[in-house]
Structure formats: C-alpha cells, structure tokens
Image (cartoon, rainbow, N blue to C red):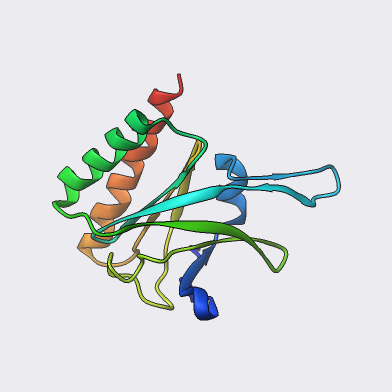
Length: 148
C-alpha cells in the first residue's frame, strides 16, 4: 500500500520514500545502514503528479525532456522548488513544498516510483490519479531510456 502524504511541521508536506529513494540513488548508506549521502532535489508539480529530481543526477536536457513530457500530458505545470531528502524515523522522507499546488493534501495516498535520479509521486484514487500513475510509468520509461 502506498504511503500517505504527511505534515512535516514548518517544512510543509512530505512523503516517506525510503525504498524508492535508495533505488533512485538519492540516498546512500554505509555498511551499517547509516546515511552517507542525501541528495539535494528539485520538486516539479503538475496536476496530481510530483517529479522529484536529484540536482546532481540529471543534465538540464534530461530534466527538460521529463518536464515537457509531464506538462504536455497533464496540460499543467506549477511551481518547481528545491527541497531536501531527510532522515525520518528508520528511513527517509522527501520534502514536497509544491505538493498542494499539484492537488495533494495531508493524508492522501501517494504511490511513488523510482528511476535513476528521480522519484515520481502520483495521487492515488480517482480517474485523474490513474492518469497520473500511467504518466509516472511513462516518465520512468523515458528516464531509463535516458541512462542507457
């Protein structure tokens, strides 16, 4: 089951993303499981979709291709804001400053998919959420093709 968007105090909304963040290379750990690297990220917001990009992981051209694809598919684009990966409990969370722009609220279920250097967070539920989930799949495919 997908994690829920949560309040992170003054930092706004966040999502627990431990496994996807590891898979995407946005966090790294030593042999004891201690964090040795937490990526600086930028969060792009679209209707029912958030694209989290590691700032040191993708070229400008790669980010542009993903953002243009998401914009054309959703016919929307909102704020993009820098954010942080953080240690939270026994794992990691990502801050999502523009989440409300994309229609996310605290408590929303938010499936998260990973590809090298990125996370895609879609809003679960209605038809728009299903469309966002399909778009997230498409963007994962685009990203994987970029790194081949």
